[in-house]
Image (cartoon, rainbow, N blue to C red; front, side, top):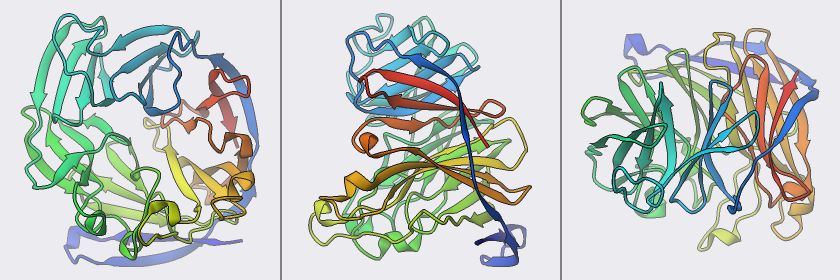
Length: 362
């Protein structure tokens, strides 16, 4: 059985260092998955090889961007039928640019589309009527909005994933995980979170940026690669606490390259972080890729997509193999939103259809 270290940063004292306030023995257990239903998504002329930033609202509305970087799609989670499509061809009330849309969020009856290239947010009602456009002031040289991972409003602030657009050697030393903007006028307010120091020990190619979710007014960040650490920030950007996660399966060894990213070997990566954002229960779910063989040529046949349940109150970590080698190249995304104990997976089936699968994991 492996331990999880629980670290608390005493930010209120402004000492700028971390304090290890204790070690806890978390039990490592094998979890079980129970599927509830499987809904076929009616792609209707679209073939979604890549999906970005899938979100579910009110347990009935699925929203995501596609790999064309040009459209935001809305589907009914109960029937799989399309409810809406936002792009430059379908929006007639206001002319929006053709590309750079992969992320959005919904508040009440309005949808907010992020254009990560123009640093603008376009607001419409669900029926497509134009409401407003807001310019974001990045305020920092060589910083750009990221096209994936996180875009949401918490209180009167907008939290958006950003990255440093410069030499790869500076990609992680100069970047921060999130930038915070005023929801009123788009003014830049602050940054939140740094990348692990191991990211900068060599040239590193990750599958995505860090995993980010909001829960009960706090922001949680889980790094993609290396030793997994779940960090908790308040909305002022102060680190409140952090938990080092351990697994009997996940391999934290990094894989760097010299000149070409294709030189790097396969490595395990955390690609999803999920929780019931309305419950203060200390329960989080994380999905990661794992390879028994890290060789890029032969390792795909040893691929598995695995699920972890982290219960900080009961001090347990449950883990299970979710999908196998067939999904090495296929779409498989665990959604951030958890409804009670119900999780949701977007996955390409072996019949080549796209499915929204709801399930329990314990």
